[in-house]
Length: 277
Image (cartoon, rainbow, N blue to C red; front, side, top):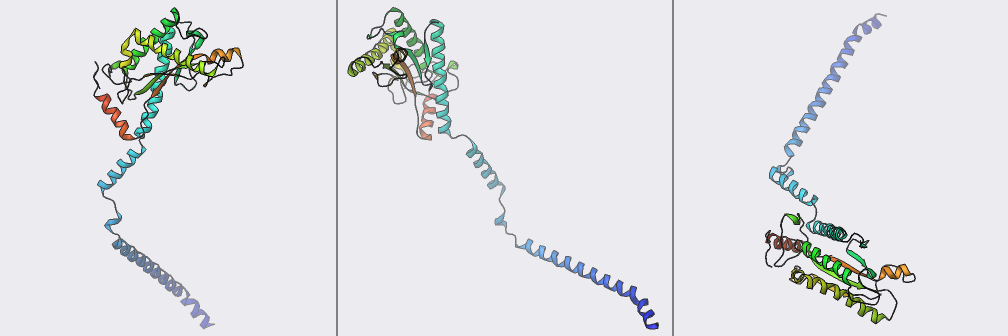
């Protein structure tokens, strides 16, 4: 019994000893962790960090990559400018000739006139009113081309906006329906396109002074006969739609960024009153 009492008397001291031992172990463990952290800190190399200068350069390069590619930006702008040119031509023609049926092609790359609206069936001669329409179209086109071409009459005045795209060609296309021999239709469509350009030229010969980047006149003609119908030739309506003149605008399409820069340089040389080549 006395032995048991002695054991009970010493029990709190034993528990305190165990507590002290656990505390010492914890402190020792934390000390080991601190030593290990200090060791790893001494192993860090300066090469693993990036200087402020290099960091700023990387950020700038990333910003450049995020910007639009100059070539893609030019091509996108050229498409939008062509669309604006066609809408302006159509709207200004409609002001002079409110009943004129002229539409923009679904691809938004050409003005489309019904062949019957300009030329009599089977003819390449322009009567009085159709001739007035073609003359007006030539004047309006001449007025617009100064902003999108090069040559002695090219300008970059305030009326030109901020566009930087150039026109490669303005093509007057003649088309027919499927009636008659194929070769005759080809000749007829070409003759109608030639007549259209001749009337524009006679009214104001300056229209041939608008040049593309290679120094060539942008105005051109072509005849397709019945080869490019827009509707079926099986109906009267379809044939009427296929007998037409298309005024197609082809924008200059660079293939490299350097060619885009060349366009910019050529346009920057122009003055508000015009500049040579």
